[in-house]
Length: 280
Image (tube, rainbow, N blue to C red; front, side, top):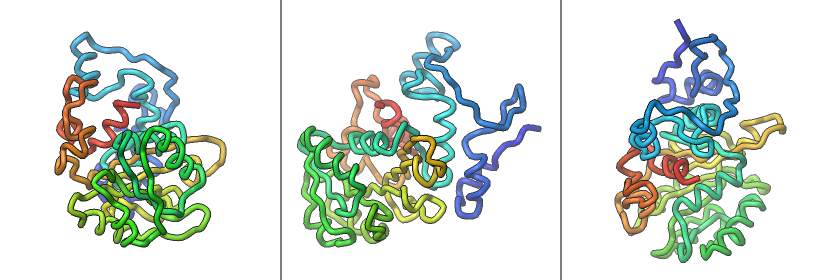
């Protein structure tokens, strides 16, 4: 009988962390019995028929459709990261910066605003100040853990708050539970995005304290060998995107590029990561 990971393990990542980090997201090949996850070097995938392809492209049916969107290898990595983070879905990408940009642009556009901790990795500062700034997105930096400053800097145009669990390079620790509580108490609640790279899910899982989205640079501690780049966007399923469809229109209103699909409806457990996957 082939090995199958008990799905209940993912409900308690602290208790089953060692098993999840080795086995989550993958089962041995049923034909060869190979236990190792192979690299599937395929850009194209076979469909059963035209209806099968249409259903998969329309998000009505799971399955591989094109290598830029889905790939068995990267999907297994994403599922493993989601399991150890306690998330409902995840997307694995080429780097931590790619994960940040995909996560942020999944919500923000020209005219939108972000409130971010001032204790961030230098490359992340550049994303907020220049990459997003050039696209018309304004970021206000406030002192890390100054909850009143986060609240004061929030305007009707603010789409999210952003912090690092452990700041790089200051090594100061964000009070994620307090930030989430304050963000949820706003007249118009906003999601809290947490870069968990330095803590890793072994030490801390922001999803358990209500963070909406978790970002990981897999290059650092999760990869651990300094030999491979990677990043991940984890959907925690903790934020109600449908509470304000106009504000969260990318997730809660029909998407014309997917024939009017509403991501919060077609993937209610993980709408954020599903849209990242579909739009990358």
